[in-house]
Amino acid sequence: MPIDVQAIAGTPVDISLERYATAGYAWEIQEKPQGIEITETSAPPAPTAAPGSPARQIFHITASKAGTYTIVLANKRRWESTPQRIETVTVTAK
Image 1: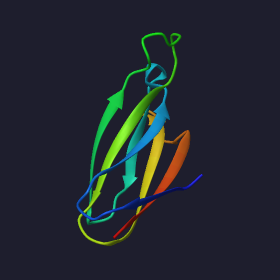
Image 2 (image 1 turned 180 degrees about the horizontal axis):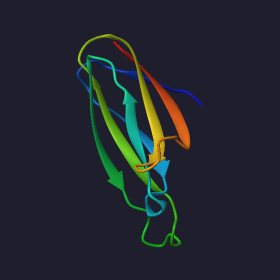
Image 3 (image 1 turned 45 degrees about the vertical axis):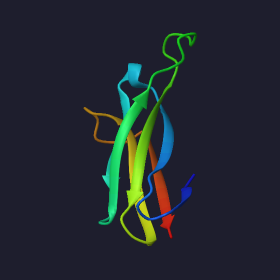
Image 4 (image 1 turned 90 degrees about the vertical axis):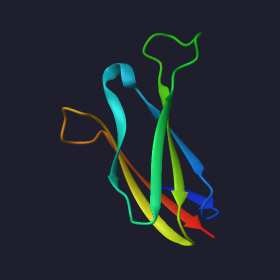
């Protein structure tokens, strides 16, 4: 399902996606337009979570100027060529 994000140019917004890091899955940036800066962090599962529980991968997205930007993220294992899942993020910055 596409993700739509409203932002203010120059101000970071966060996108948090579920991942199964213990199974080798992580989100990778497939397409990133000019004018977008992305950094990422991970949040581990809660200490009380069952083994193999999903974690969160957080993308901090900043648009350099007003406009609409499309980012494509793929969830896959690094050694596999076909993603398990693809997410399209549309950022509308004012």
